[in-house]
Length: 100
Image (cartoon, rainbow, N blue to C red; front, side):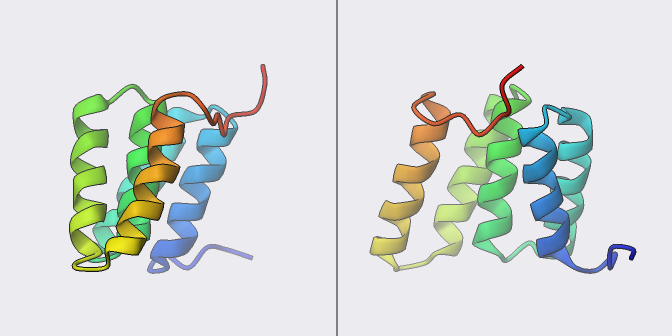
């Protein structure tokens, strides 16, 4: 079975899986592909922020994190949940990567 090239969530999921596997270049490619398909999806933006975090692209991470929050509009509860989850990854409390 092949991946639907227009399925942004599939590409975004692959980006997270590749990040977990420490395959940063593949993760970035998949995450950026997902974003190019769905630039109005907060989940895609948040996942790409995580990918950028693990690839040590701090400026891009912060930009995508801000974008994800912005896309949530006035939904303060969702913004709080997203912030808590991503900050835990960004500060190292949670590590989604497989152990080496």
